[in-house]
Structure formats: structure tokens, C-alpha cells
Length: 148
Image 1: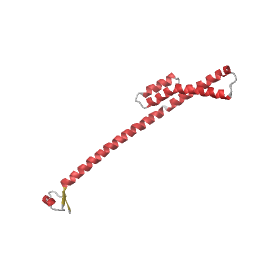
Image 2: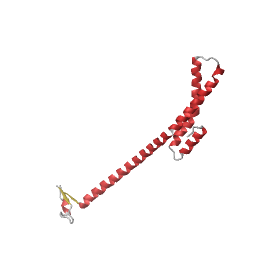
Image 3: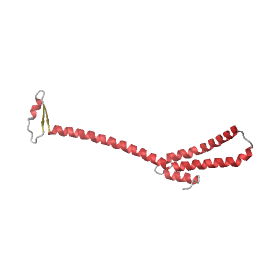
């Protein structure tokens, strides 16, 4: 038998709880349950806040990384323009090239440009998520004369 005494003062004698198959719960017992549940909910809320904070930081990093995309695209476009301009300028000095030689020369120059661009582009992406990363991005834009 379960007895619940929520009256103040109590209506049921506490010694009833000593009888076999009789369980007495009073307002103090209920307050303990409430306190335990409150602690559990508080702990869950703290865990949820930590998850939200972590996800918010990840989202902010992704948004900052997106801001650097125009700089990366401008850098790649400028380097590609330099590559094609220099190839066109030097084309006459090569004489007649076979299609395979043309492809090899194109692949070679693209490979060089990609290797030169890899470091700055990787660092641009990394710096984009840092608090003072905009200084580095501005410096890269100035060094490569990417404009505003």
C-alpha cells in the first residue's frame, strides 16, 4: 500500500512506514524527488548549452571561411590569367608543338601555379576562422594586388 501525506502538519503517523508492504511518502520525500529531478534537468541543460556553444562556434567558423572565398577565387583567377598570358607571350619561342606537347606544357604550368597557390590558399582558409585573420587576408589581397 502506498500512502502519500502532503498535509502540513502531517495527517499520517510516520511509524506507519515501518509496517510490511506499506510505503509512506510525505512532503519531504516529494521535495527530495523534486530536488533530484531538478539537478538532473540542470545537468542536462548544461550539457545542451555546451553542445549549442560548440555548434555555434563551428557555424561561425564556417561563415568566416565563406567570407574568404572571394579572395581565394580572385587569387586563383589572377594566377590563371598570369599563366595564360605568359604562355601566350612565350608561345612563339617554342615553335610548332604537337598536341601532346601543348597538353604537357599546359599541365606543367598549371601544376606550378597550383603549387605556388596552395600555401597562401590553405593559410587563407585557416586564418579566416581566427579572430585577427582579417589582417592576413588583407595582406594577401595587397601582396597579390587583388583589389577590394
